Length: 639
Image (cartoon, rainbow, N blue to C red; front, top):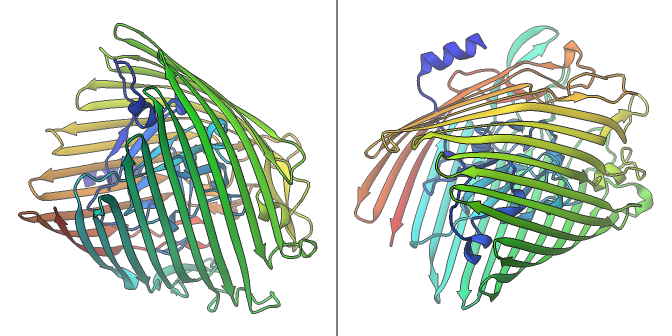
């Protein structure tokens, strides 16, 4: 830690791409129906919440660049621009967290984790990070937390073009159009990314570090996103589409005797359609309907030498309907929700007896009751939720619960948060049916989550928050060997993680200098009594994380950077020395200048990533790029 402090003091500047804010709002007035639908998040009362703003003049290309700046968030990065990036919240794995758009989870039975690299950000205005489990509202997978992306509600039509070039053959071009079409607000964005992906790495050749190149890492993608929304008297309708088409090389892990797979390719097509309809019944009640329709098509070409066929393809389909009734009466909120979800997976990687296809129906019912108590400057908000989920190919259903409360004093700007939740995660299709790995006897993971903390504003420009969390997960699904060559999924582990996270936000000279400091210390361990690894650290989860961010603005010029530190981790549950992954240290710096010509903006942005040129890995044998540069030129025409 001494080295970290020295680096921070010597740098003196660090920043964030998008300003990180705590979203706790202390209200001293009667809640209206419009606030109930948008501002007041009753279903997550007592949870630690963060809101990360996504600037309109976006100059980066992946969601992982933003969320990694938040405390208690760990991003598993497998390499360059097109490589997979998954998220862990408070010591959980990537399958135990929900990624949602406007409250609709994108996670499915076919793919229980979401690759952040596939989510274009031009459509979104912010991401809310909820740092505690809540299966009572979000269903399977909401053990560690939820990341909820909010669609940008734009006031002024505009046209924007962005072109980016960078190291390792990176190129990106984006066109965004925001206007009214036949009096219907319409937004669309088209983005292309190209990336050669050959970068220098240090290869451990029997103890000697040898300089070589990372090859077969090329990537290209075409992203399309759009949103249509319209208010018709007491009906609000929103239709959103996200489509991604990509091709990338799969070099695989860097191993002694084989640097990479020089032929493996992956072609992917993925699309999401999300419909959101709000029908206001009375002044204090409304009906909500949401539908998610998703489809993905993946093809592995010349994947590995030991596979008999030249290519393997699989297709995933999901159709989810969510209906809810909401009533607000005398500061009491009642919510009743019904959900029907259909998932289907077809592919050659499934067990032969399935005839290359498997499907699942999910039926869910949930109820939520919330109450606001107010006396002068003191406000107490309490919420209780319960949910039942039934899975067609599992023997038993699952009950989940949530209890949360927040006490706030508007005069002193102090708030105390407390919550408890019982959560679960159903096994995914690949854990149950994947060839030579799946286990049809798996049962859902069950987790109990506790969290308490406080938020305090020392003054108008300084906000402080801290929270203590404890997660106890039973029947966690892990991989264990059946023989030296084949592994299988088993309900085996009991994982316990507890820790503290801390955040400090300082705004100096009215948004001239903005800084953010986040620190997390946690203890994620395997506590299964029958385990040979009892008391050992869970793989790939750091015990310590630190982020320090600072942004300075003077007229049209902005200087920003961020510093990130994660302590060492292990790649294997036995915590052997050979599975040790060293600490991760990274720093980025960017410079931006805005040229203003009436309603036209020309933005020049230059970014240096991994300034310290550190040789880092987050996943064993998947080295990350060294120092690299990105130059962005953005043209905005506002109405």
